[in-house]
Length: 62
Image 1 (cartoon, rainbow, N blue to C red):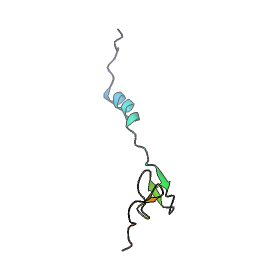
Image 2 (image 1 turned 135 degrees about the vertical axis):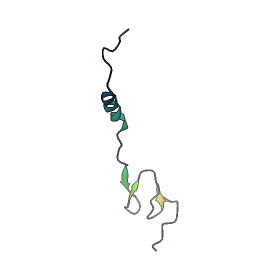
Image 3 (image 1 turned 90 degrees about the vertical axis):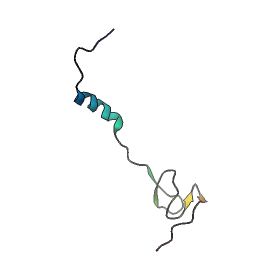
């Protein structure tokens, strides 16, 4: 069975592990009803629509 010849340093190990820890930007799309930019799979806070249906009442202007 193969055995490593040298100890893998903490820096080398962590550098390798950070590849999988990188954050991705959230997916933002245009609302099909009002054109406002919203996160995917979320109700539009401006008009209250989700997948073409009125889900919530839109936020009122104060």
